[in-house]
Image 1 (spheres, rainbow, N blue to C red):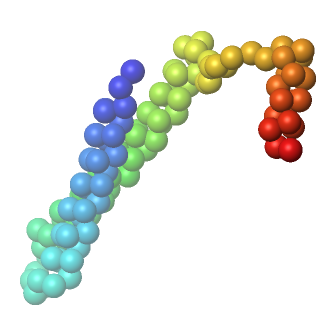
Image 2 (cartoon, one colour):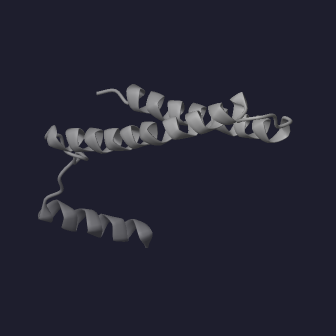
Length: 99
């Protein structure tokens, strides 16, 4: 499974928040006229749109984690197994090298 759609959702959240922040600055700097400016409307709309997008991305992260855990693959693989007799020999050899 690919993480690209989730990363795209998080990038979308970042983009919406960046546009909202830029529009907020623009609305704060521009002279006020009667009624809300276009920049203020864009700031509110993009910030409000970022919240559910972030929620969907967060739920997607949990779904991907659950999916990967249910695939039945081990989280790690044992590279080699040491028997008790070999472990004693290895420990003895290691102490000889240290001395």
